[in-house]
Length: 287
Length: 268
Ligand SMILES: Nc1ncnc2c1ncn2[C@@H]1O[C@H](COP(=O)(O)OP(=O)(O)O)[C@@H](O)[C@H]1O
Ligand SMILES: [Mg+2]
Image: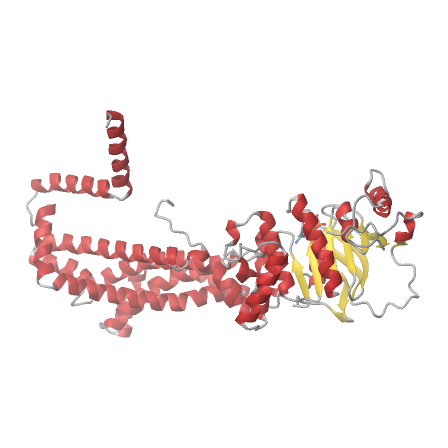
């Protein structure tokens, strides 16, 4: 794989990163052309004690067509909750999420999701191939065409030769890759991914991270990717949103990362950004 | 061959005989054969006398004809019961209001055996085939509905969500997610339903029929043919056993991908 050693070591690593304190100060800037916009999104869950725990508090998020956004935050801060709201699977208790200016109130084929737990998301009675062609099948794509499409993405996630297997015959990582292939085969314009590579071994994860950024650049899809792994966020993200701890989770900082892909951990820009993001998660930070 | 090897061979063969049920039946027959001689044959015939009586009605064709008639009634009512019960179960599992309405009803009817309705059904639908088939239908329907609805309720919400984000409409979700998800539950209901169906048919044939295994068991008493009663009972057991085996085979082969439970009574 060609490494990006063309990028000379920059004198000022900061040149690759633009920091933005959230909520956005540039409210005057035109915000009308956002593809997906979350404004004032709040989520309360009834707790055992009776009073509602506020997990999300006033989330502001603007996603433009073709961008790659990463939500980075500690476990339990409400990342999955936010993704579910954007996917249209749950309603926020306050605030709105719009797509193309229209409020999202139900799931749609335009927003494909890779769920955190592949086990609960793929269909155990269908083979890998049948799982992957499920979306096109629902859309009424002819059998031959959807098979072809499914095979293509099965190959891309490295599952060739396993098409005929049932989920119980697959490892956790293979189940997750089945889910990713199923998403890609459905041709959604927005890809919502909830810690999709968490169950993969280090090598496969690396391959999949590179495949994802390559696919994103080739297809111009919009990606919203959740992780709690700082390194992963910097390896793939174009825009990284730092989420604070629950309760009352907010997006406390946004980083726009201009490092070219595929990225390496040894790049000075990477090292610099890692140090800066790490500070958010260090003990005693205001996060 | 060493004695050790022989012992191992014997133990292996013993294991096979035990697993296939041969040992169980041999013990049963031995007990039966040793108790029966203490009583007159008209009161409690032994295995050999029963076999002789069975041969008699087997050769004149009665046993086969009666078996087929009972089996036909059972299968017809049972299939109809499944066709009605499974969709109803899905509906009840999906619609909360319906569930709340029906719940108290179910807990009431749970304790009324189907046979309790026999006289009513005979009054309403006549002494012909209709009343018997409706009775079996009712007996099957009930367990199928309850099991199917339980299956629908146990579906992990993640799968339905996944199907929605993949663009499936609510109708297609029912057919492509809900139905496959509850196949194992429906299957359990269907197996239990078969048991209820056999119970119901024997009772129905005893009270209102001129043919069938239940009729055989009931009328043989009038001719003091206790051996035929036993033949009828054994036949019922055999019919049930074979139907259940066939059903389980079907589940194992045709419904394999839905992972239906192929378990015996003790969950083996
Ligand atoms: N349906 C729910 N009911 C009650 N609490 C919930 C529900 N879903 C999530 N939570 C709570 O919200 C918090 C955030 O959950 P989640 O979004 O899954 O976090 P993350 O994905 O960032 O790890 C957790 O404390 C979790 O217990
Ligand atoms: Mg999560």
